[in-house]
Image 1 (cartoon, rainbow, N blue to C red):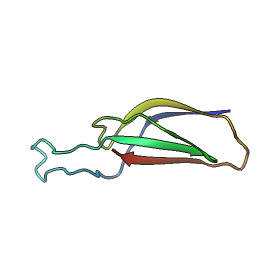
Image 2: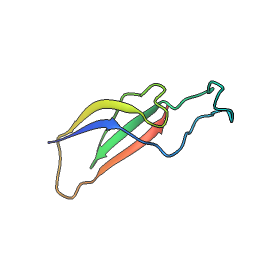
Image 3: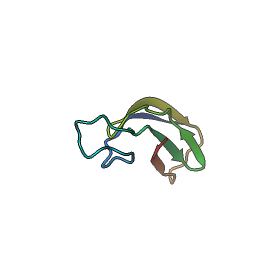
Image 4: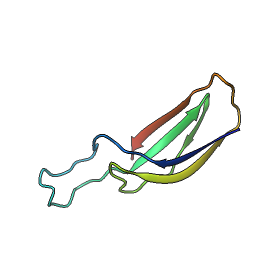
Length: 79
């Protein structure tokens, strides 16, 4: 088995609306979650509420069926 612990991401850009004036409270802030896949097995993280561009999770995933030629895929989505 392989265990993957999802810690933190540093995202390049915001996907939700921010006003041009940074002194104004933003209307929306990203709520990212992650899909972690190995082979045909896919697991979803919890949603990091208002995580913005630097979300943190702390979720742990265990994948049972592994072989040497399988790749780890991480996808970050916004709720």
